[in-house]
Image (tube, rainbow, N blue to C red):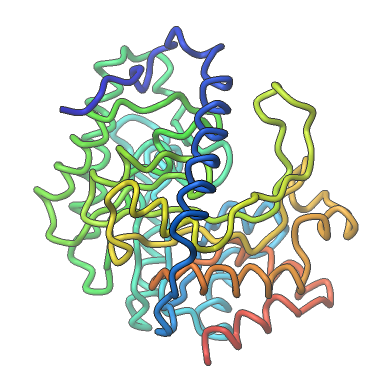
Length: 348
């Protein structure tokens, strides 16, 4: 029996106390990891090289002033990406009730299929990129029950449209649904399970949902799908939900702490996908507005190399890099270091 969490769509009572509770959980979790790691020590990761992919968002590419279709084509043809993580943002594919716009996602899926590129396609209400919940405006006038019905109907429509693509590899259902980040409220595990069960009833491809690699508990999200996806960030700008002064913060976790966390939550390492590895800056303003000095606080070519090394030592076999659009943005500014590093990573 899954524990009861606040409803996905309601304004739950714990809203004001939640940041303090999360901060307490994080501190407790870091303490448990430190003690366990001290007692049992690091494990030696498998020497097998991970399979690399990238996440892509056409609307983020546009926010950087890029032609998103050219960006996508360059990722596939110039960079040599062969594993992609794409998303079906609800507000983009169903801007009006029952009126679907498929052109952008169809084109991405077709171009990937033509090149034999494997795709993990995200569906649901909370999906990658700010503000995380990509609700169509027309949801605002609906009741909680009506929103749930519309959500499930939308997911069914997406799965029915794309399940025939032979290059479709995974279904991602929601993104960090139980982690308090973005303009979203915490999901009800029962609803997320209902979404995953719906996808499974419509297609045989494996499913996964995700949690924050550093701040998530993994206990619920890790056991809902066939696989489990996590993020991995090293240095971020964080305001701690207003409880502490905002700072640039480096997570004090050794690479083997993720394996310890997997052990504590009874998750086989082979079941965990690293679906969001930090490979772009995280500042206190939109990425295009960051100065080079501000970028360097969280991302530089040296930091990029260190993050890749760290993630490889963690032992995950599938790693999707986060920030592909930004690499091209920097390349067009005469700074190709990140683009060339990823090209070498994918070729070697």
